[in-house]
Length: 198
Length: 198
DNA sequence: GTTAGCATGTAAGGAGTTACATGATTTT
DNA sequence: AAAATCATGTAACTCCTTACATGCTAAC
Image 1 (cartoon, chains in turn green, brown, cyan, blue):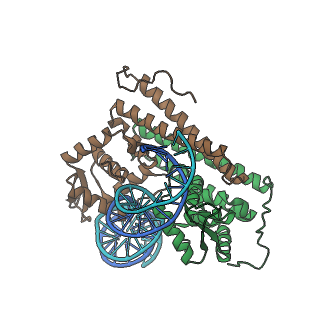
Image 2 (spheres, each protein chain N blue to C red):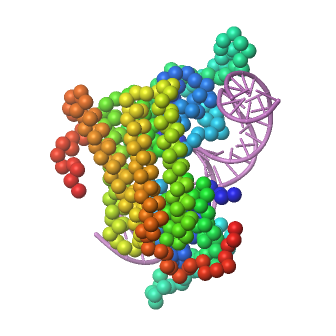
């Protein structure tokens, strides 16, 4: 299956895994994570939270009056055990859906919770995806059927360079992963045992 | 107005302006233009062409049997006078909608049909948009409420560098536009000094 | 002769935005 | 006192993808 809208779900689950939060705060964190232009609206977030609740992955606690004052009660969401389980499983998925433009960033942001083997698979998958694109664009550049004024060419040149740059970045990261450059994840949630065989 | 789905419309109109085409060919050209990942489906293209037809911007000619052989008739679309008019007007729009991630590339691709003043406005608008983003991300980096493991940091660093790189690219292009055989007209936005600090 | 590419569409649905609606709290 | 920001949602709509449906033509 690997549904398409997985990016938001993973982001929300991951952030709530870090710490329980209410919607307003969550939105800001998600925007920082997905960031770079796309801004998540409440019209997406709240329904998504409800769906996550129906699925049993989060629970909504209406925290009344945090400190003694008459503060408006805010609805704080937190992960259930099922939610943690589901998140862990989502992080294991290192297939094509993890290489998408939209998804990759989020998956990368939670790499410290992802096992090293999956990390390398995702990075390599992403790299081949980009190399494939380069291949196509370069091939298209050969056969001259397409429009080729100087601006289109300039745009293509810049795009090509950007992608090449990201490929080099990925290569560096892969090398670093292989040589164990990153400190190993040691948060409490080390898939202690039993869990999740497919 | 400035509808959101303008990118596809401008792309189609612009490509048909270059030369009449049938849908299948058009799709490939649009993909080359919008390219870099997103692939346009027929489910989007054909309804869009119908809508453009209803709006009076294109006409569909069913070319029967191009050469003598019993070839399947293909439906060739071409711009009407209204379509050309509408396209020209769309190219004049150098407001915020032309600075979007999705739109900017398409608008840039048709710069050779855009007048020089609009070109500069679009490039500058795009640049300020990106600089605004940099500002926000850098500010967010200061206050340490957000998650900050090494991977998130690495992602942010790379994103920052990419955007900075695009800003430099835009600056080069703007300089080139200004010096490129264009007498310094009184286009209102004279920031001859002051800029680029900060 | 069968696979790959050419060619044109429709129907259903997903993912998200905008605009609407409402009100409390904090800062200036 | 006003403005900004906090806080939570709903309804309508748009853009686009996926999957379906159909059939021709070129190449291997």
